[in-house]
Image 1 (cartoon, rainbow, N blue to C red):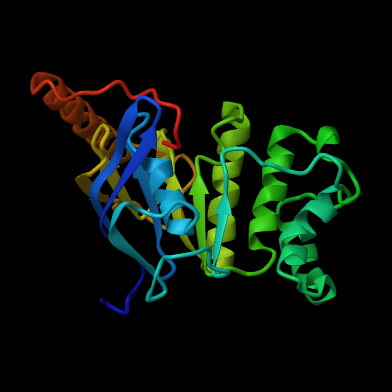
Image 2 (cartoon, rainbow, N blue to C red):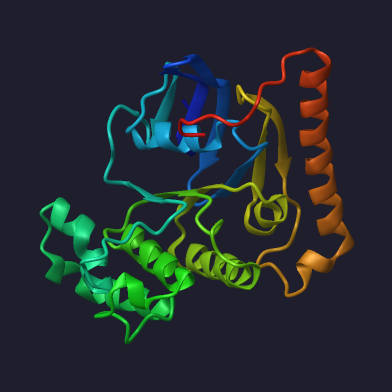
Length: 273
């Protein structure tokens, strides 16, 4: 294994057992991520993007193949890995600050040792003054900002982000995309980001992995040749549109190919996708 890579996914497959029979979610998918890199994973709905991230957490082991985090094979959840879900998942009976402290309490850490770091993070996501508010008193965007602080509270080296802004309105989502780039630049975390929005993937990432329809396997990898930091208005430039269009064409080609070969499956199923 190359020491330059902090995430190595080597031909992983995942088959879920359900009441209606096995569901082949991933098929020999591979990916490598260097330290401090920002990669995005895109593909048709149900292609296994979320399954991949859950496998990397160690919570849902892959059926075959191997994955490595920081040189160690993934077998159980690792402290060095933080995950941000599609929903903020804040506990409704706890205040914002109590929700942020929750993983530290689970790990039996002294929260006082992290208070300065968390205060800085809260300020960086513009939540200062809302520490004692309950989730019901916060907007969706504010709740997701809190979940980002919670994931960063114990200073993990890697962030796995599973469509974290999918439930937000378009304006708030754009704000959150800009915020996550600001946090990435400041913290230098390694980020693997799942999204169904190709425009979001191209705007955020250095590299985009494209999955085929289920079972998700490697289709293409796009190195995003756009300047850092992303200039204001980059999403309106011709080069940006050209990259987005090429990725979309790749996904459509894969879907049409499976349909022609009679292999295309309904992408709706009730397991993690």
